[in-house]
Length: 329
Ligand SMILES: NC(=O)C1=CN([C@@H]2O[C@H](COP(=O)(O)OP(=O)(O)OC[C@H]3O[C@@H](n4cnc5c(N)ncnc54)[C@H](O)[C@@H]3O)[C@@H](O)[C@H]2O)C=CC1
Ligand SMILES: O=C([O-])CC(=O)C(=O)O
Image 1 (cartoon, rainbow, N blue to C red):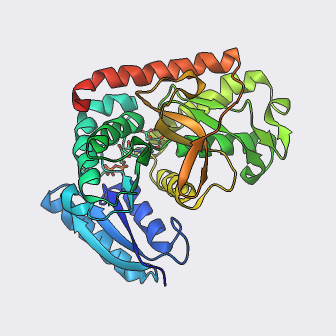
Image 2: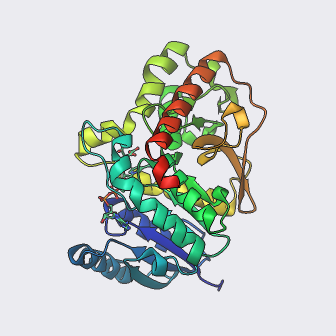
């Protein structure tokens, strides 16, 4: 048996975690031979911690072979002790009629202290994924705080994988193939309604996606459907997406940790000037992961249509940054 690794999950009594914890415990995240220590974090509110105890009872009742032990915490300084992977889910979700950036004030304050605690307590190689919305700017806040404590901002990502998976699914349905046959989808920018799902480089069964679908469908159907999918789920379910968000979080961290086998995956990572997106924001890019590291895919052509959309979502992220600049100080 391998040595157990520590996986911290915040928002552990919430709806995403109710799916995520079981996926991690079953081995979907790090493989079928990797034992895990679950570090479950919640707010220090008795009713919430009681609810979390109920979830833990259920994890116990699954008798998962890979669960080494389970801890409950309400302070990130104890909860992130020795953490190898952190899934930062805990934050308020939006309701009908809200944009995700409307949550900045409610949620931004959560991520500075968590970034600080990761730097102080987690493994020096920790990899953290921010799921809580607005995910990109929350990741920027966490990464800025973590960097002050010595972590590399590249260790803290934002999740745009749900958008990536949604784009794959929409295109698969349209072209009548399985999602497995689709490669090189990109989500540029923000996990918001300005994100740019780009199929300029996408292949479907080895053929250029652009040769299989018309541009009017891309502009009027595909892009808005992917951009608005979160809102459509809220309208249908009365609650924001949960199991699909957990699944995307598993996909993101698994590919980061174990490698994407040469495949492109969309990840919200610190902008580094690639594709003209100057540093200072966390931006969705196409990435390839290997040996526990990610690299932004370089050298792609960007046409006028794509550039305009990449700039819109970049501008929104710079506005979000300006709105929380005080949290970066
Ligand atoms: N990036 C993405 O693709 C997606 C992001 N989300 C976001 O994920 C977040 C969580 O969603 P749900 O699980 O549905 O919400 P939820 O309300 O069911 O659960 C959130 C939990 O986080 C806890 N929490 C709040 N502050 C915390 C803190 N400082 N430390 C630890 N726990 C804390 C709350 O007590 C609550 O139990 C929301 O912000 C939502 O908008 C949701 C879907 C997709
Ligand atoms: O839309 C929301 O608020 C939840 C979310 O981020 C998504 O489903 O993409």
